Length: 177
Picture (cartoon, rainbow, N blue to C red):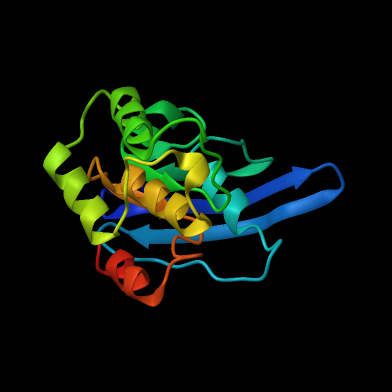
């Protein structure tokens, strides 16, 4: 595995075992900087687990992975600062408004977001951020997660089923972003 900046993501021999279940079994992966890369497979194939290893949310049983040449085990906080993430299963604070949630995420990221860009993302996705999250449909929750991931213009986006629950027009907006 090289550590060239030509590679956004590299993984070699990734294995993740949960008890008797081998969730990821020897994944080798190289993703060039500046490309869009999709990982396809059936439920339970290890896609989400691999994403979580790349972000150092969970640790691999064996193998090695880097993001921008940074070791996923050693440099997790730095890697997470440089990326935007939308999980497949969003857990959001229902009592908050969408605006409050986005402001909280911006603050956690060190207020590194462009407010005008954030507003434009909300407009493009047709997201009303003045409502409480508990009132949102699944599609609007997905939109909120997407705005949170994109609003800091991260170097890398890791999106787990990003268009689930979105209408075809909004799916095209996400693809264009």
